[in-house]
Image 1: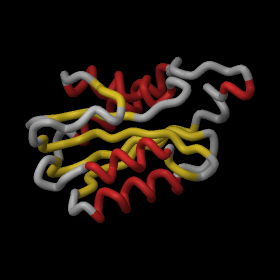
Image 2: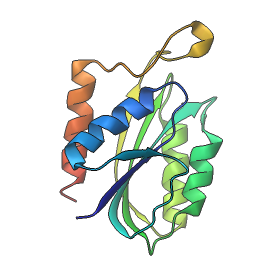
Image 3: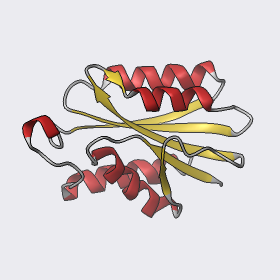
Image 4: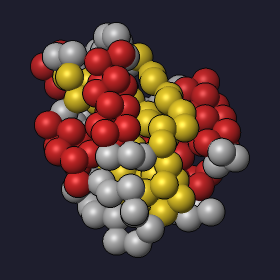
Length: 142
């Protein structure tokens, strides 16, 4: 199975999850807008939620995807609040491209990494690592 990982992050949280997925998948996680140069069976796509929306760069990246290049996508998101807006937006974008969404992972960070609050992201708890690694393993079987 060919796998790629792309993520958008502002404060390091989503990148930290992407790195954990990369460890399981055995590939390098790369930030958007790194293109998908060769067809992949599975793309892990991650992004944060900002004011109830995905970051513009994550949304724009989803618009560049092609179902001839990406067969399936697994979405992972982080937020300080409800998961649904970004997850739904990224899912809708993938489905509009004809890319099958095979799974979702969300982690509520509760303000961790919000620069406005003087917090720095990217440091995951052991249980968060366990959860995202289990997600990665499950997605690799689909």
